[in-house]
Length: 52
Image (tube, rainbow, N blue to C red; front, side, top):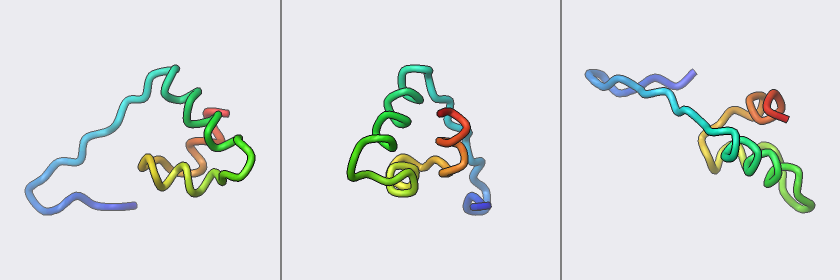
């Protein structure tokens, strides 16, 4: 788990249904990988799988 810098509170990102669908679609597209999409958007690969 990644920790925020001292004195900073890490805020949780809330994803809309539309955003979740778009990320799942990107990860499912030919030529892309779940890991690459997850890293690009700061989401855990397991989270993308759960949304799927």
